[in-house]
Length: 476
Image 1 (spheres, rainbow, N blue to C red):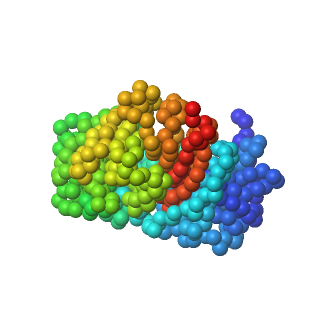
Image 2 (spheres, rainbow, N blue to C red; image 1 turned 90 degrees about the vertical axis):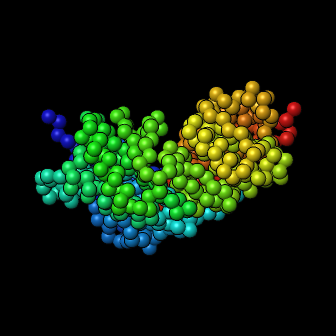
Image 3 (cartoon, helix red, strand yellow; image 1 turned 135 degrees about the horizontal axis):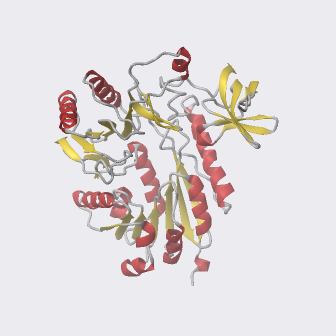
C-alpha cells in the first residue's frame, strides 16, 4: 500500500486578509493558504489539509496572538456548524470585506467603467435577523473532533440541526441558533425531545427512510409564526405518530399561526412539488412593509432579513426614479414584493417569475393591497421574456431584475438589450455573476450607481444594487 503523504505544519503564521467563501488567507513561500475561522492579524500554527500547486488549505491548530479585529463568537457551535464563518470578525470589518468583495468582482470580472461605489448599508440587527430557518433530521449525527478523540460509542446518533458541508448525510445537532428569534430554539429542541422520548425514527438520507425529515420555521414582523414539518409516512402507525407530534406542537406552541406538514417520499427535502397539509391555522403568514401586506406561504420566496429587505427595496425604488408614467418590468419577481412596492409610483408593473405558486401569491399581494396596475406571468424567464412579449405588452421604460445567484441567462440579457429600457436596476445576491452580466449590458448601458447592502451578517454573502442608464448614442 502507498504510504499516505504527511502534510506539513507551519508555526507562527500571520493571517493577512479576508478571502472568498468566508475564509481568510495567509502566505507561505509565495503560496496562498486558505484558513477558516481566523481573522486578519491572528498569528497561528497552521496544519495543512490540502496542498495544490498554486495554493494550500489549512486549519489553525493554535492561535498565539489574537487580532484586534477579532470578537468572541456568541454561537456554541461556531467553528463546526460553518454557517456564520465571520462571527469571530468584528462587524465593521465584515462590512469592509463585503465592500471590497463588490469592488473586486465588478472591476476584475466586469472590466467596465464604474462610478465610485457607495458605502455599504449595514444591518441594524446582526443577530436574530432571519425570518426563516430550516433544520434537518438525521440518524447519523456529526461528531465533533473532541467527540471523535474520546472514542466513545454512542447509543443515540439522532440529530436535528444543520447539514455539515461536505457530508451530505450528516447533521450537526443544534442546541442554540442566534440567527432567528429564540422561538426557533424552543420549537426545535422540543421537537427533538418529543421525538426521542416517543421513539420516532429520524431520517436516513442514504436509504431514504425514516419518519422525521425536516422542519422549516418562519416568523414575520406582523407577529405571525409558521412551522412546517416534513415527514416520510409509510403506514398507519407512522401516520398516527406524525399526527401526535403535530397535536403536541399545537398544544405547546399556541403562538404558531400556521402549522403545516408535508408527506415527502422523494430522495430530497425540496417540497415545491409536494402537497401542503394545514394542521392548524392558515396556510400563510403576512409580512408588512411601508403600509403594504405581503402574503408569504411555505413555498414563497421572501428576503430572509425583513428589515434589510426594506432598505434594499428602497434603494431599488430610488434608482428606478419613477414619476408615475413608466412601464416597469420586474424580472424574477418572486411573490411580487418589489413589483407591488414600486407600483404606486409607476403606470404599470409587469412581473415575471418561474414558480407558479409565487406568481399566485404576487397576484394576491396586489389584491389585498388594492393595487390594480400590476400584471404577473409564470414561466421560465428566457422563454417568456422575448421580442413577442415586448411587442405585446410594450417596451419598458424601466427594468428591475433580481435574479438568483447564477445571474441572468444570456437570452434574457439579449432581450433586455432589444427592449432598450431607459434604466435598468439590477439587484444581485452574487456580485460575481452580476459583474458578468454588466459586461454584457455594457454595449448599450453604463453603470451610474452602485449600492451594496448587507443582508447576512457573519457570512460572506452581500447584496448589491446597480443602476444602469442607456447610452443614447447607441439608439437608432
